[in-house]
Structures are given as C-alpha cells and as structure tokens.
Image 1: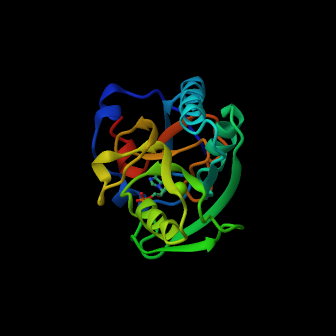
Image 2 (image 1 turned 90 degrees about the vertical axis):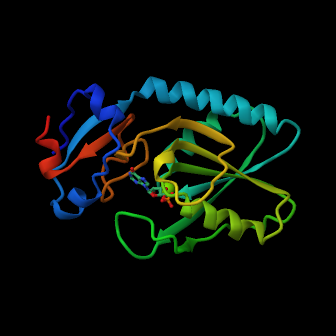
Length: 207
Ligand code: IMP
Ligand code: MG
C-alpha cells in the first residue's frame, strides 16, 4: 500500500542508505514520504528547458532518454524546449546486485540512428554512483558525435564512485531511495507526479 507521510527535517538531511533494509523486505512493506512537489519539479523543468534552448539555439540536438526512468522527465522537458530537437532512447540494464549499479552496463535497447557529427544530450532521471552515465558517455563517444552532454533531474553526489560532469542538473538530493516521476521501486511508483522517498521495514519504525 502507498502511504504518504509528512517528511521530518532530519529525514531530509540524513545520509543513511536504506540498501540493506530494502533487500530484506517484501514489496508492500515500504512507506512513502514526499520530497519534491509537482510544482517544484515543473518549475525546474521549465528552467532547464530554457537553458537548453538558449545553449543549443541554431542547432538541432538529439535528446537521448535513458529508459525507463527518464521517460516522464523527458516528456515534460521536450515540451518546454523552444528549439527543434530530435529524440531517441537507450535502454540499459545493469549486471550484478539488483538494488545497486554494478558498473557493468548492458545496452538492451540501442539508438535507432547513427550519431556521427550530432550534438547529443543524454537525459537521465537520477545519477547515483555515476557508473551508468559514465559507461554511456564513453560508449556514445566511440560513435563520433560532435559532443555529448548530460542533463539529469536528480543527483546524489554522496554516492558518486566516478567523476560525472552533469551539464544540466535539476536537484541535488540526499542518499535516499527515491521514487516517482518516472523512477521506480520494483516497477512501481513511476506514475507519481511528485518525487518521494521510501523507507523499508525497521527503518520506518523510527518515525
Ligand atoms: P548509477 O549508475 O549508480 O548512477 O545508477 C543510476 C540508475 O540507478 C538510475 O538511472 C536509476 O535507474 C537507478 N537509481 C539510482 N538511484 C535510485 C533511487 O533512489 N531510486 C530508484 N532508482 C535509482
Ligand atoms: Mg535511469
């Protein structure tokens, strides 16, 4: 059941990771707390779209969404961009541990087109360790684009395991397990219009 609770101040600042708790608990025992409201997200999306439209004025960038998480963000973003763009998607899956990126990423859905000489803007929902984006940027660069830049809605800098240069960033967020606005837990919560975080099992009893 999705139960929305009010966020407390210490929750927002806590750096504790729920990874261990998350692995043990059955689906449905998690509790959802709001973090970023719908209007705050939409305002940020407009701001990012304005910057992108200005920076790429006179060009037609190829926006590449990383499936599935970035689909909702990208759908809103492209509708606020005022210059012509084209769109494509990459589907990735990560080998290894299920709740954390192993760093070994497999492209399961590839671009439909060559990107030689194109200006590519990767659209990602959330940067955690940074390993997925790092892999994708290196992979795309081998295909000879004019440039590859990154637009990410959320970033958890405390979790980075590699250097990632995010050219367009929405929000810096604490090390929490986030869901909503395209981001899932076991394929659920993608349809929330806002972003929240989940607490699992014993962890949620603290409140
Ligand atoms: P990274 O390679 O560790 O940066 O992983 C990035 C991907 O992991 C994101 O695109 C998400 O699909 C997933 N991910 C990272 N953090 C979260 C989270 O808090 N909730 C849900 N998925 C997440
Ligand atoms: Mg993603």
